[in-house]
Image 1 (tube, rainbow, N blue to C red):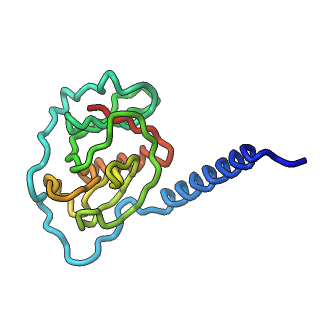
Image 2 (cartoon, rainbow, N blue to C red):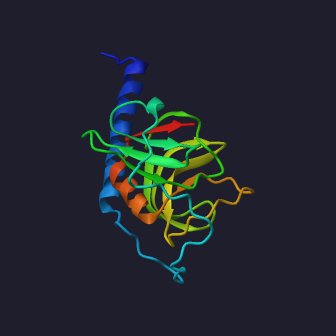
Image 3 (tube, rainbow, N blue to C red):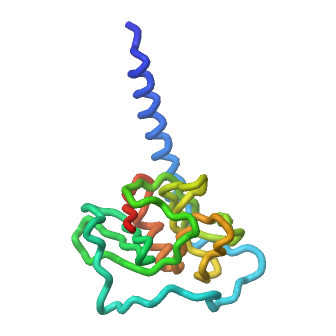
Length: 185
C-alpha cells in the first residue's frame, strides 16, 4: 500500500525533530560548566558599563503579558531576564545587556546551544542559548568568558544578549533545547 506524500513528510519531520532533540541533549550533557580559557587571560574587572543593579529585596515582577508555565522571559525595554520555573518558586531575575539586533515580541523555543564559541563581535563566549533570528543574525543568551558586560558596538549587527557568568550558568541549566522563551517589549 502506497503512503501519501504528506505521511512521508510527517514521518521525516518527526524523525528530524527526534534527531535534533537527541543531538541537543547530547551537546548539553557533555558541555563543561565553565569551558577552559584559551589564550591570554582577560582582566578580572569588568570593562565598560554594567547594567543597573536590581535591589534583591524588591525583585522585578515577571511581565504580566509573558504567558504561563515554565519559560524564560526577556524584556527588551527593561533589559532583564526571568527564569520562571514550573514549581511556583520566585523566579530568578537579572539584568542583561541587549544585542544590537532585537527579536520581535512573541514566543520562541530554544533551537540550539553551544558550550563555548566566539561571538559575532569576536569575543570568546560561553553557554550560548539561541532561540531566534532577525535580519539574518542568530539571537540568544550568552556570557563573555572574561566576565565583562560592555554595551555592544552599535555599528555592528550582533545577536548576543549578554549576562554575568553566574546568570549564564543559570540560563544554561534552565533553557535546554525546546524550552520556551517569551520576548516582551
